[in-house]
Length: 63
Image (cartoon, rainbow, N blue to C red; front, top):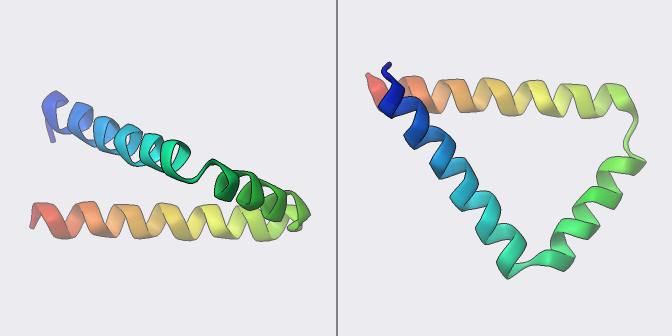
């Protein structure tokens, strides 16, 4: 994986995040409130699940 791949990946994350904030800002607020209401351990598990899913998707795209 080269520098161009890393930059492309970061760029895609920013595009998706930007679309969410631009098209559904109230949804973002509701999601943040829901996250705040979750126990820390559940947030951590959600983050780990997201991380594993992302790694799996990148691996599938590269192989």
